[in-house]
Image 1 (spheres, rainbow, N blue to C red):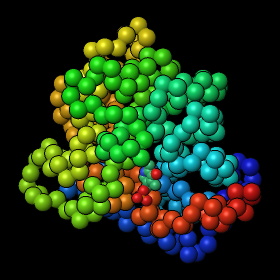
Image 2: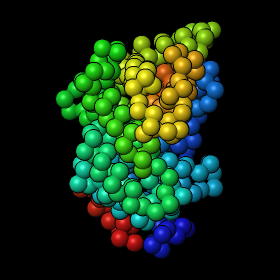
Image 3: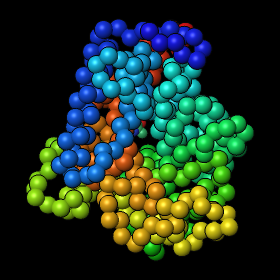
Image 4: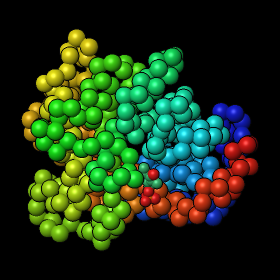
Length: 326
Ligand SMILES: *Cc1c(COP(=O)(O)O)cnc(C)c1O
């Protein structure tokens, strides 16, 4: 039993404990193996995407007797995250991974144990979050990722990618990154995020194994990027963005806050590192291994951590109503 900030008692049942811990353990093994296959120095962070699953399932993963506690969880609806954060322990590190309207920013940005907002896509939204966070006392700058629409699909959120240096002039992605770094002292630009096309992702389910193990780490990463164009595009966007920012930031506004970015070398020698201090958030249930090999620093896995989600939002919220009311 765990007591949260407001004293609610949430108790996972045996089925939940068994299902969630065995699934997460399997996902961790896949990440471990793919990292080793890719000769990476360190594995990416696993964010268990808990949307539409009840607080009791989240708690079963966060505090249990069988596996190491899962710390990072992600949600894609502002109200759902706000409600869950209230009834769950503050030792959880929350990621917001959904579309965020500026007028809903305060529901998310006021959560004390919020770790990252992964889907910042406009100066308006960045300013809204900045305003809320700058009023909180004694909190570190909030990490944000910028969402990139790597697949160009109209139904996907995010800004246009940067494919080469000619794209930088007038680029919303570049302008937003520069704005956050120079003007938003309560935020920390921490990386780029993509969802990518479902077709590319599904194809990757069959590509969990490395084809030629005797390749170098760089060759394995390049091969993985060729197996998923969305990952290649996100990787390239970071490279172009870091190079453009390095030479154009106003040092008087930046100070020593972004030393890794300012000092980034032309070559990204460690493909698994957060080059220039900027991480890549890519990889979900279907394309997890390919994403790890391609150099992801933050994988977001829902279905393979918790099982299939309820068919509708209404059904899901109805099912967890009692737990959210406490
Ligand atoms: C739901 C969701 C995921 C997880 O997807 P699965 O295929 O269930 O692993 C990852 N990222 C985002 C932004 C999501 O909304």
